[in-house]
Length: 510
Picture (tube, rainbow, N blue to C red):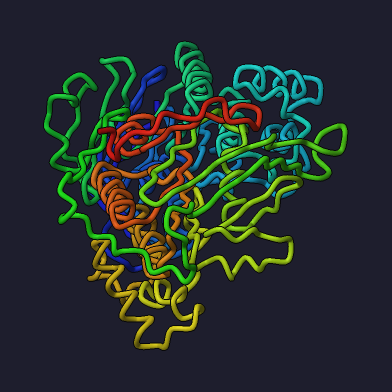
């Protein structure tokens, strides 16, 4: 059994971010901790994982119980220190940001999965068998010899989960384990978790939304602003009106405004002129290979892809993890260059010497992990960077930044440091940077991953508004309900090929 009693927790002299929590998890239990961005879910997960932050100035008042051992904390220098290696041998933790959990010392997926138990002294033969069995359960066998830094987002998430479960922990804490996974991968992970739970492993799963599919008697703890607002079964949670706290249910369609006058995104101000009736972007016969991957030294990721993007288009790209979605997106803004075929933006072919920065005024890109794109000291400086880099004066750049921040609902946060904001707000800062730069084409990699109900709806409205103003959007997503509600076309990628042309519909599925 593991139990967290939290009277209060604050990071390094900051405000209290978690309080009034008493969570006990018995062997074989399944607990869903849900809440909007900034609700305290990740803090709760870290505390259960033994990360009390005592060495970093954090103040934790409460207690942690693991089995029969209870540790009390007063927030003072005399508090007990938890041995991370000893704690993690019983309590495994898979964090929300997968890149932060890579060992950075493993050359292959197999070594990454084996890293923890190898350091704890598991015998070599037993370790090899455990890695092979875990990889088979999570559909990773074919990836065991791959470099983990070259995996897709979904493949990497499964690798981190495999590294967490390989030692058959008694307690498993998972922060957004299904983020970025395709349907098959989600099912594989869910089956693995159920096997562990049936064998007595306690599971705590943190997410912004209620699960669409889970045992109705599993427990739900809902947090808002660091405090519990609901504690009961999943069946009860679904009728408790948690939508008022921006806690929706996975798989539900976004609730977006249908009146274009309510859409806040500004009309595109691209520096590229577009011929009337011409496409904003086009791929013709594009193939692409990463060099040095696989046993033959080369892996063909895209194979003869054709794609035309016109004003008003919202194109959804779906497909399994590793099918080539992110690779295709990165051809649209020049991050990758085709091995064969052509890519054109606003009717202009991209050559191998076309500077990627020159395309920023025509194509804006949001990575799946938008935190990788934030680097300035304040939100205003972050959003103003794009217009300033394109030649706008300081006042003009800041004016565009303030307009964009107002469009995403973050006008109040201009003076904040981006990393002092919550996850959803940081993603909206990245969207504001996109709007301020004025590209005609938005390229979005998993734009709804990790968003709560309010953030998901807001992103949907921004996308619809951009298309209504004459721009276009190309997005890769595993969120079928979101794509179905917004996209004018949905294309499926498999093994680097587009399987169908995608029926053209009116925006919003009309």
